Length: 624
Image 1 (tube, rainbow, N blue to C red):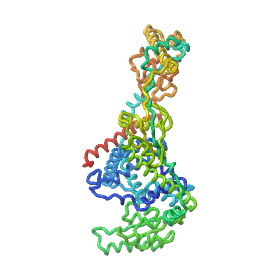
Image 2 (image 1 turned 180 degrees about the vertical axis):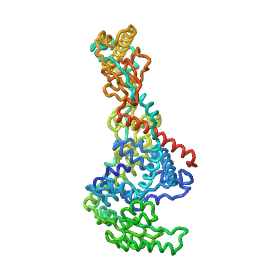
Image 3 (image 1 turned 45 degrees about the vertical axis):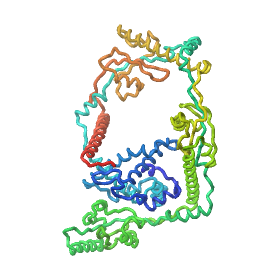
Image 4 (image 1 turned 90 degrees about the vertical axis):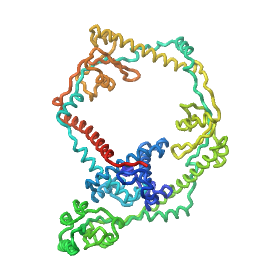
């Protein structure tokens, strides 16, 4: 999902509203729909609940990622909640454990780090510049509030710090590098014969009499599979699209426009003074007065923040807090920020956190939405949302009626659809709707094929839904020779080819045992032969199949030959002549570094997996 936000959303109104639901969730916070507390928990990690909302949001995120990777042709079965939920819950447990550990270790993400990530995210930019308007749109399209997005970024930074601290502790010793080089830099001398199809199979080798004899002897091989003719109802969102009235559009526009009127943004930094437990009120007031005096006398906030601020997270970065549109900070802070000019520093500002001295470092003007674009996108979104609602209502109607009905006519009448009839198809192949494997599976299921019932609703890509039933069953039939003559010929050609290859391999092995070289065997058989000296596992000159087979062969048996397929028209008969173990010193310096990096990467992956496994074993995890 986050990757899509870095790469997607090209226009101001791109996919603004899906039936206005996304905006509603972004404005009011979807979390409010789910109560917190153990009664709503699906798991507990060291006393902390993972709620139904947490799990559902993780499932939604997985769906978005799958949809982005696989595109419009994604199999809806991959998006089934029951299928995604176990993996999502496991990931949430791991994440919660790691965040708890990061908290114990005192790992934090500064506001400056988060701000830099936000500002650098391509999806939040227009013409290469960060746009608050675009920022809000992209977050709304992904069902996120700015607060939740910043929290996610903060957690990601903490998790990265924790993982880096673990994996970067791994290193590769010289002995381990040498052992790796012994395998990875091993060199082998490889000889092989190249065999073309024509070398073992004449073009006219299969005569008609042999083909007919094979057909007559194996009639069961050439049965046409059982087929069916199906009746079906197909509902598609595209059929439900209706014009949007101007009154409805204007009402939606008035509701939505305020979401895209972006206030000015202020980049701020601060000094925070917090009264310590052992600090008296007078001493605390003296500290506040001291800081105020230094700022009044001209010292810059950025110069003294590291010395005096109690906000560890921001003081290391000059006190930077990032941008605010007037809603990010407590009301007292926002009032002070609004009253400051760029470059000005406030006097003491009291909040529940302590006493702040605030400086406005930059300010960007507010922006307004492109009203024409917004109306176009709203019109499309309202039309799509209305069509989707009507479609889903009809889908449920069809589902309810078809469940107990003897055929599909009543369900079709209930939604004003028509019952269509397919061409014959079998379990493995069909046309049109029945080219989809999930639809064929529904037709040939026990409930539909054996019991004669209507299917359940099958959800397809592109917002289409189908219900099917078997109208007619066509039993298997014996195909005539004319239908399968080419298939018979192909079977016999393949058998003859394999027999020829096996015979050639036996002859070559016999000659090799008699002391002939592979070159001599090539001349005897009229074949091309090749040799590669000092080949390595990363050798790019050997065909991949030859290289893989050569390095799988035993170094002790130079008299054995290995036959491998190169493609459907060519084969190789391989002899391993010699093997020389790899030496680290023989590798170039850059190759040594690459080898150490490869081995180190494997160590790091194992170390991280073991660390996470240890965390789980030492933790109290309850799955409800």
